[in-house]
Image (cartoon, rainbow, N blue to C red; front, top):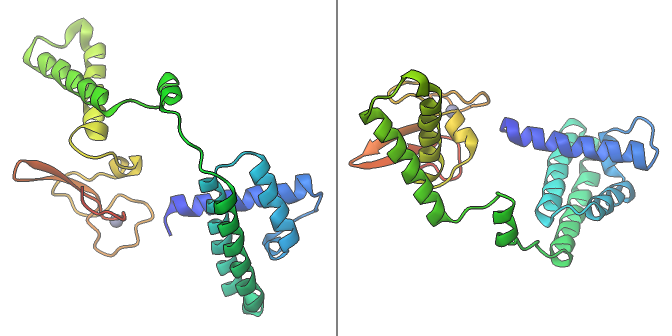
Length: 219
Ligand SMILES: [Zn+2]
C-alpha cells in the first residue's frame, strides 16, 4: 500500500476516533468502535453536516472498509460480523451517492480565486516563460539580474513539466523522477523488485514520461 493511501486511511480513523471522544464523550475509543454501527452512522451524519463532498464521504467509507479488513485479518473471530458490516457500508455508500448531489464547480469563481486557468491561457503562459528563458540563455545573463533570471528559469522548467508537453500528473511523479539512464527507484514505499522508477525519455521527437507506479503507466 502506498504511503499516501495509508496516510489517508489513518486520517479517516483519527477523525472517527476524535469524533467519538469529543462529540459522543466516549473515553479511550479504539478501532473496535468501528463495529458499532450506531456510532459509525453518527460519524457519517456528522461528516455530511460538516459539508464534506460526496467524493470525500465515499473515501471515508472506503478507508473504513480497509481498516475493517485489517481488523478481520487480525481477529478472525470478528470475520462474520465484519462481513455483515461491509455489506451494510456498501448500502450506506449507495444511499449517499443517490442522496447527495455532486457539487458543480463554478469555473468563473475558481478563476477569480486563482484556482483555475483556461488551458489556452496556460499554453500562452508556458510559451512566454520558455521564450524569456531562451532569450536569457542567448543573451548576456548573470550579473545583477542573476536572481530574477534564475526565477525565470525555475518558472520555465516548472511550467514545462506541469502544463506544457505532457498531460498534468500528480506532483509525486515529478518528485520521484530519476535521471535518464540511472537505475533504481526513488519512491520510498516502492515494493516492486527491480523497479526502474519514473523517467523521462524521447521516442523519436516526442517526450515520454514512463511511470512505474500508476494506473496509467505512460503519458
Ligand atoms: Zn518503484
